[in-house]
Length: 230
Length: 230
Image (cartoon, rainbow over all chains, first blue to last red; front, side, top):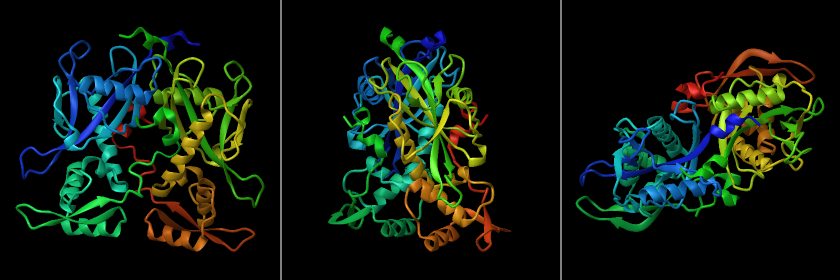
């Protein structure tokens, strides 16, 4: 075997997307947690949460562990996003297996040394982490169109306006409320409840997702212990 | 840094899908190339083509290189599929970044030590390669529904019956010809030509894919030199 192989190390990183509403009444924005680096390389820059893969742990386990250690966050489900391995992405040779997850706003807690940033307005990050976030956002935008993925950012019950705001935040554009309602009505993904959201506006019906539709079907991988939800 | 990290090595493997028609008139089957292992572990078993990641090459480059070295195959486009890193998938600790590609039947050539196997009828493979193929097949089945991916298995011009046979081979079930024609007609992905396939049956119109639709959109990654087509 080529001895050079020994010089390549494996890390895991995680992109966690959530929504944050700056002020009551504002539209929500897609946000993600970053950790400030306390040593070289890129000391002082913000980076995705992560760490080294342990010799005796699977990739999914390493993603959960390093995310917990750096941010205290524990999403119920982490999905593998992509492996980044460009030769020049770090001063030493590191292949990073990147995971991603969605967190509902109420699952987000503030932790020291962790900053939540607007995904559309990031500073220069360490390594190739700006590129990684850009790719994760692209995948999120694609996925929201054909799956229940917006559910990962919402409470169990929500109004159509709240669901539309999630789509608007992810797609970064306004959607026509009437068209949006028609599209949702013709899909089988939402189930109307008998409950209403009351407040300053007229009461709005609450909906929930049809649980018969898989949130994120990963096919054969979901049966493997390596990739099971913790 | 944890010294254990040094004990993890990175490999690349590739799943290449093509179609093979056992006898003229038969329905085509999805096939893939495997390489017989000539040393431990798993000496004598068939395995996916692949090899170690070089210290100075990107992941995409390593996938292309090792595929060429082991099989002589050179698909124009390799897509990263998934990183497999279960602790027990190999006697030593190996994380494999797996790529996949589709090859048209005329691009397939026979090479010594390479066997083409029916994807639905594989022997016991080395490592976790049976699981990897199962996952790749699942992704192929999912992807064929919402992209032009079947194009990667067909010549530039094809009849609707030939396209339907590709879908049938991938999905492993018969499709109703009239329904299939209707679905294709309502999508904007195919363009009819003025040419016809003649032979033992009545002449059938040839179609080509609408090139305005991306074959496989990978978003921001397609702009990165690390992941560019060779």
